[in-house]
Image 1 (cartoon, rainbow, N blue to C red):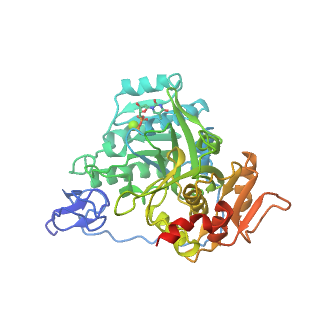
Image 2 (cartoon, helix red, strand yellow; image 1 turned 90 degrees about the horizontal axis):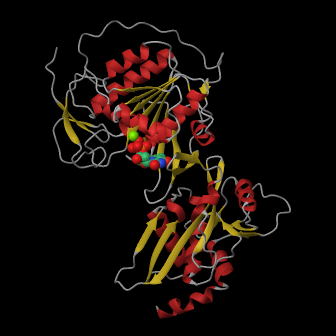
Image 3 (spheres, helix red, strand yellow; image 1 turned 90 degrees about the vertical axis):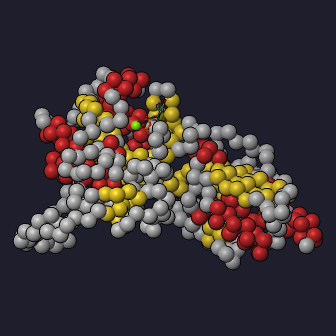
Length: 466
Ligand code: TYD
Ligand code: MG
């Protein structure tokens, strides 16, 4: 057997290096590489001569299949994100920043499942039994039959789970605290986390229990983040939100048993997380309808329409280089919209600072928000408030054309439901509801500028100067 060489593993992305370096080539992070024992866990080299393989039976793609059996929590925001409930025998990773509310959410889910007669085991590696009990009391979950253990050793956890009746769902909080006897590295390293997660997934597959794994997202790279196990689990959910705001979003990133791009919206309270069944009302809650620079975007999150306010502030700059600051949207996408406004619409913004903010700390990833962003920018520059009852959507191309986007009908339906009678949308959009009034179809961004500012002359002052 060859002598085991030490290897160096990036704790952020799992890239293996032959020698230590300050910066990882794989992900570009600094100070994330540590020495690791290659013989332990997944990815450890062959310890012995490999055994002779056994042939498995090959099969066809068609044949008997069953609908994945699920355990539903009854918390509809959570069930939607998982695609209809946790799937038995599968592993789900719930990632998020420390303190965002993962343990709270899962304790509430555990209590809800337990009330429905499921056997739930909650293994806490971070908090002592007394702390978890206190939380359960605060959440009104103390009287349920959720079984609790405070343990971090993988072998002990597996032995505990194997005892008694098979659990329907197991929660491991968190994977970063797991450590196994068979691996030499310290808890929290890539090897330990992978070995622990692998063992938990194997337990889920063998027994048919649903496994929920909690993973902290780390920026410092001192402990391995959830990314190193994302490919091993069946579904990945991220719990996110802005610390300054009181609502949280659970987002599907990967799901082998359901759709991705779904979101569940929750509101934080002293009694735990409350479901928000109509997120648009939350994001539009504190609207100042008379101020210029605010446009309502009719967006989609998976199957669900969400209305959000896009706010822009355009002001003459006092610096040599104009500032561009974005919160909740992509900075390079903003640069593109600004360039299109300059090149095709005669809207000069080079001497203006531009601030863009998506209300409520929400994040938009859809290109369909382009038109709403442009509307907010033009409205702010022209000091003209947009109509109170109007929504905007459409994707902008570099030529200045406005392209149709998907699910037009659903966007318009949600807007109408919340009292937005008018909409500015791409021309030649498919599935337009017949006889619907108040629709302004635009071919290109210049149409939008004319619609808002009356004519491009309103920007003449800037144009004349250069
Ligand atoms: P916690 O669930 O412990 O976060 P995580 O497991 O992601 O690290 O929640 C962090 C803190 O926030 C904790 O002190 C409880 C508090 N909290 C509430 O008071 N209400 C809520 O609805 C949530 C989600 C959290
Ligand atoms: Mg926690």
